[in-house]
Structure formats: C-alpha cells, structure tokens
Image 1 (spheres, rainbow, N blue to C red):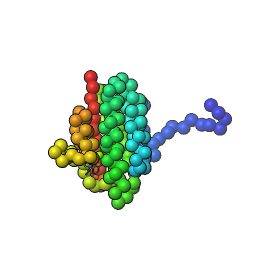
Image 2 (cartoon, rainbow, N blue to C red):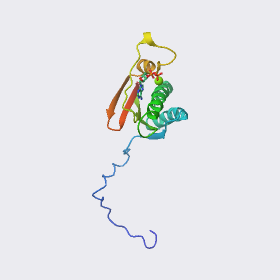
Image 3 (cartoon, helix red, strand yellow):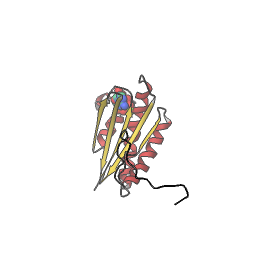
Image 4 (spheres, protein in one colour):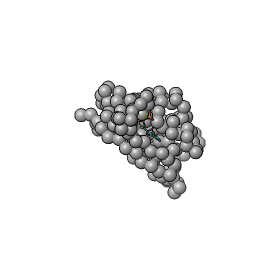
Length: 156
Ligand SMILES: Nc1ncnc2c1ncn2[C@@H]1O[C@H](COP(=O)(O)OP(=O)(O)O)[C@@H](O)[C@H]1O
Ligand SMILES: [Mg+2]
C-alpha cells in the first residue's frame, strides 16, 4: 500500500444508489448520438458490437437482423428527433441475453410509429413493415420525454 493511503470502510453516500453486485451491469450499453443521417451507421455498428459483447454466442444471422432493425429504427428516430421540440439526438440501447437481443431507439418526438398498410406503400414507408416482418417482436412505449421504439430477435 502506498504511503499516506489508509484503508477505510466505504459507506455508500445516502444520496447515491447502491453499487451493483459484482459482475452485474448497472445499465445496458447505450449510444447517444446526434440526430444526423450518419448516426444510423453508428447505430448499426454499435448494436452489433454491444450484442456480441453481452452475448458472445449470438449467431451471425441474428446480429445481421439486429443491425437491420437498428438501421430502420434509427433512421426513423433521427427524422423524428429533428422535428422534436427539444434535443436533436437519439439514444440506442441494446439488451442481449439467453437467445434474444433487443434494440431500443429513443427520441424526443411524441409521435408514434405505425406500419403502413402494404397497399399504400410508395417509395418510402417500408421501414416498419420490414421491422414487423424481421423482428420476433416490436413495440413502443411513450414517456414524458418522447418515446422508445424497440425490436427484438431470438435464436436457439
Ligand atoms: N421514431 C418515430 N417517431 C415518430 N414517428 C415514427 C417513428 N418511426 C416511425 N414513425 C411513423 O411511422 C411511419 C412509418 O414508418 P416507416 O415504415 O419507417 O416509413 P418511413 O420512415 O419511410 O416514413 C412514419 O412515416 C412515421 O409517421
Ligand atoms: Mg422509416
């Protein structure tokens, strides 16, 4: 032990949350980025890396699908965030474990996603249809600061 260093018993400050148990991630990995088109590529790379890190056994096709889902959700999130009254950024969160991986994209817009009926599809408007077809499940939750759109893949 270095000179002048004393061992003390650390007591948590009452205002701070207790530290997580050893080995338990306190928060899932997340990426906060500017609501600009380049962030879609960052989101794709991030979800692949984060899922492979959290769940090393994630098969390649699940990682590929997760990237695609992230791409569509982030594209929508970027557009929505740019029209939101505050905070032109998106937040991407990954949670992968035990044969499933989930990506969430948060943005500050109160507007919600929907799947366009196939009959009305024009040049654009296929993103959520793709999400519906490729994801094992998807959904959204709205909250005071905007909303989160999520999609999950499963394997095993
Ligand atoms: N994150 C989002 N925030 C607000 N609206 C969204 C979001 N994602 C999707 N939407 C709505 O759902 C519609 C369908 O999305 P999508 O199928 O990806 O088509 P596109 O993005 O080409 O319009 C969008 O046009 C938009 O109105
Ligand atoms: Mg879209």
